[in-house]
Amino acid sequence: MARGDVKTAGLKVRRGRAGNVAMGEERRLRSILDAALSAFARQGFTRTPVAEVAAAAGVASGTVIYHFQTKENLLAVLAWECLHLLWRECSGAASAAAPGPGRLTAYVEAFFDFLRREPDRILLLFKTEPMELSLGQVAPGLDIRTLWQATRMLLVNIFREIGEMDGQELPDPERLATALLAHVSGAAWLHLFFNESLDALRGSALDLAGRLARGSVRP
Image (tube, rainbow, N blue to C red):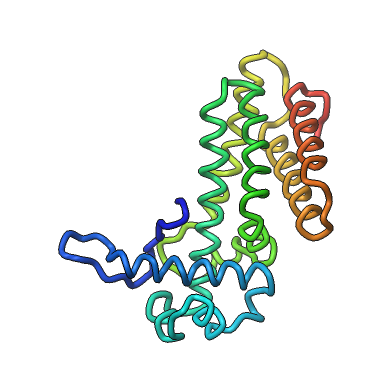
């Protein structure tokens, strides 16, 4: 989902005769989502009143409530969108690469490219708890947990593919995927909260990915 697209699950949108979301309505929804993303990522969900999001989006508070019903629903939609974009970036890059370790490299590169381009989206995921959102009764139709698992399973399948291609005894692909995800997540944390060099962190993650693929490091 690129900017300009609007995830409509759980939202109230007016549709024209052809069933398409009216252009003005789509822009309004995008403005609300972008304003909320910036505020939630920078100052936190609990510290951001709906009125502040509405003012930044150039709409009335009632318009935000009309479309999203609650602030929690707005957060859930944003978390879903962030995870969906991240999954799409990583899966697209991995699919375009040659089978084997090249796909692992492409996955890691895509993650860091996304982090460089969309820091607020990663900040939002760090400052909120999307897995807890997935257990609540918010934004029905947004399967946040399944989306996160799909992002992780992409790595699992890449490690499994590497082992099958090389005929080597790799450790459990599930553990390898968990270890690499923990590393790139920690790298994102160091960059966003401690201003560590993104290029250095990328290099470290790529080095770890290569060693995990060769079986020289066991998580």
